Image (cartoon, rainbow, N blue to C red; front, top):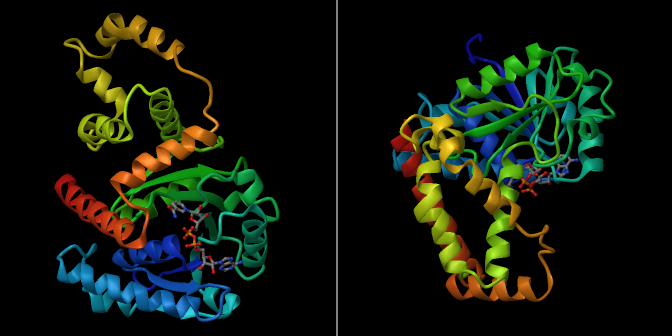
Length: 315
Ligand code: NAD
């Protein structure tokens, strides 16, 4: 890919994810123009990004080769969509997770950009066929789904629309790699992409185990944080299988295939996630972490510090 020097990325929607994307792209040396349809929101986002980027520099956790001041000099906010899109080669949409809002944003964006501009959505679980249904040229559309907080958790799921050109997928892959993210290619659209399908499978079984009084909330969370999660931060489940038997994956299957299938066949139905079970699980987690802003913010800050440390360790 050509150098980022002078190239413009427009971020549409400047909430939590829009601000994070802006910081990621700035770290790669791109000029970032932010647009938000709430008056004053994009300039408030700039102030928040400035604070965060300066704090990261202070903590020696700033990403990229440029100083905080140099990165911030590449950033601008715009109240007018066409002005925000002028000169952009890549547009990252980060508005509310509402299908109609996204559809109309992309329809409006397409009216202001040239044919070659890539249109990318941050949607967590809307299908590309729906998100881009009002776009005329869907060959340049893609979903780039980040993980919160994207500055520390590098994964980006790239999901094509059925009409997306392979060259667009490749370009997004290169861009994400260049700015220090870890892209993966989802080869065809599927509800929940990969990350949320795996995440929901884990949540469902954790929920069932607590609901059925097999284990407490505190202990099921420890099963992940002190057990599975420790190695999953470095190696995935398939590599884990490969490493966990002396002769690799085939050996693992010989040893554990039947056991896996027996346990899997005992899984219960999809939980309702409401009623008495939800009230009880909520009570248990709130006893551990009260749901007031002070406690929740402190835990989020601790989470981000640990993620930062982990990201540094993995480099
Ligand atoms: P948010 O509510 O924090 O921010 C949304 C922003 O979009 C707001 O500033 C709002 O004013 C602006 N907006 C709304 N409609 C707009 C429009 N028509 N034009 C321009 N701006 C508009 O939301 P968020 O958490 O940043 O999520 C944004 C997207 O990222 C969603 O699709 C979400 O699913 C996805 N996402 C979120 C997370 C997460 O954990 N928060 C993780 C991955 C992906």
